[in-house]
Image (cartoon, rainbow, N blue to C red):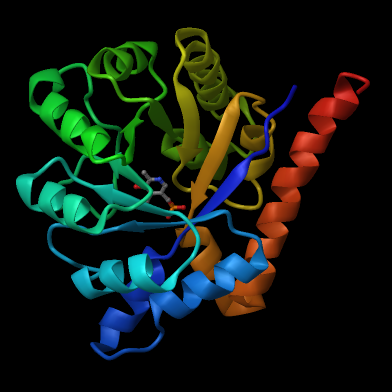
Length: 256
Ligand code: PXP
């Protein structure tokens, strides 16, 4: 049976716009409230080391004021671990972080970083926080995540989405997508819950949402950008509808 596909709305870039002027508007917590009404199943926020968008106060308010589960994206640092343990979000997604990068440019090296990551996974799990590792769609990384005891992986969809920009569904898009499909199947086979995200748009979400073993997509930048043209509520509702359509078509294809 195909599982329900949750939508986590990432509100980082509402904070990016707010921070451009240093004031209080637009308020990411207000965006989170609106996302809940528009059909989001969770809120995702990345507290970066340089606080370029989400602030400590945003995390504090999101945990106190929003009823939806919060997925805190965090680097594997002692500072972020302390913050996660203080706020105890529903979930924490460990991501690689470099100050000079514009966004999270690739997955975590769960394989190479085993020794460093183990204590973070253990401490977050011990606090009852659902831990995921943001990794490239590479079976080696999934095996490493499993060995680390992470119950969840989030597959980085950035390369697939980037390829779509260049060839709109051509060979590079198909190759990127095949990696996601294979990785999702591998995650299922070894017993990992599988999520996906990064760079997803109305054009790229459908095939990803149709991967039946995925249970959550996290989407942010495109939704906040699209909100400029159609409003955040409408952008989220349309994304949700595209995800639901893709899921319904899996059933259709199987004659269910
Ligand atoms: N998932 C993870 C782990 C991320 O780091 C990000 C970006 O912060 C996203 C999903 C959402 O990516 P985007 O903003 O491109 O939709």
